Figure 1 (tube, rainbow, N blue to C red):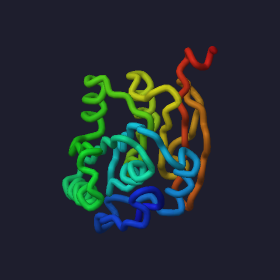
Figure 2: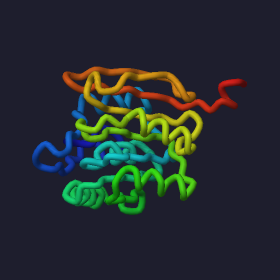
Figure 3: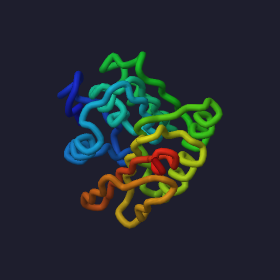
Figure 4: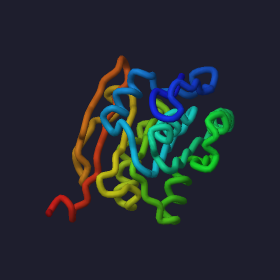
Amino acid sequence: MRIIAGKHKSRVLNTLEGMNTRPMMDRMKESVFNTIGPYFEQDIVLDLFGGSGALSLESLSRGCKMAYIVEKDYRASKVIESNIKLLKEEENTKLYQLDYKVALNKFKNDGMKFDIIFLDPPYRLNIIAEIIDFIIENKLINDKGIMVCQYVRGNYIPKEENNIKTIKNYTYASSEICIYQFVSEEKENE
């Protein structure tokens, strides 16, 4: 797995052995970033299920200012930590070894808001809709913010509600990616 574009282009990242994490394949990642970017200016990223940290580190490589990475699994968080050090991005990342619910509540209590949110939970969990609802209800996303959701095809049906609009929907083999943009009610009514 590698960084596709930006200041860390072509750098190879460490991954966790086995099937506990499923890094987004380069072709899928390239399609996602071409849709949401491809480059950014000072955006704040949340990667709620970090895996190897590849999506957050790709975002930083393309100009994002800060990445908050959440990963519950100890071994996966060690891989993320090694990738952060490999790219010398320690000052631009915060890694939390927490359950996603604990992390979301922490971010809510801290008044955090994000510009780009990656939601790629373990496939056995069917939680995309509940996480999106929590993010919108607790104002964790900035106006015009992007949510990239990856899940097993058929495990979630994309819906445009709560001021989110579908930008793109991709299907790759057994997985699906839906990219949403949040538009606040005030902006929608202008």
